[in-house]
Image (cartoon, rainbow, N blue to C red; front, side, top):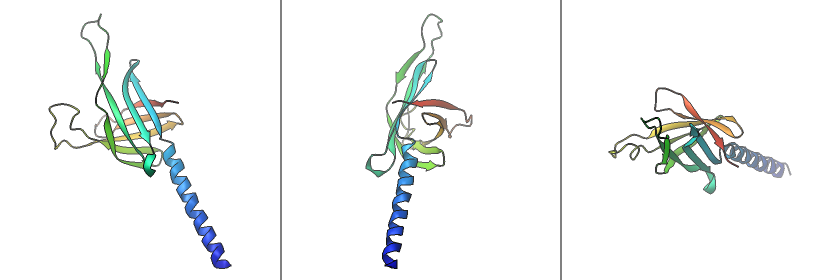
Length: 143
């Protein structure tokens, strides 16, 4: 009887641990959008299909005109998959390939490291950790 009780307690503990991991990753699941000057600047799509976090990021090219009468424009680039997404406390860290970011790229361009830090349930800061500035962009999750 004692062996069965220990088995039940062990299985329950493992199930609770798995639930805690799922709940942690669910904080990041969704479509996150960032803007600059009311124009789209980045769209980050995070899913947990297949048991782990995955997704893609789409950066927009912001073109500011040198002529005051012409508006600033925002053009979407090519979506890039997230590599090595990992939870670190209140953050999701991941990498993005840099090969196609600024043509002419090379196959040896290193990946770019990002951190998505939760600020609130539907608000997060995306920081490019490969740049020295350390400033980020606030993203809002869509519903």
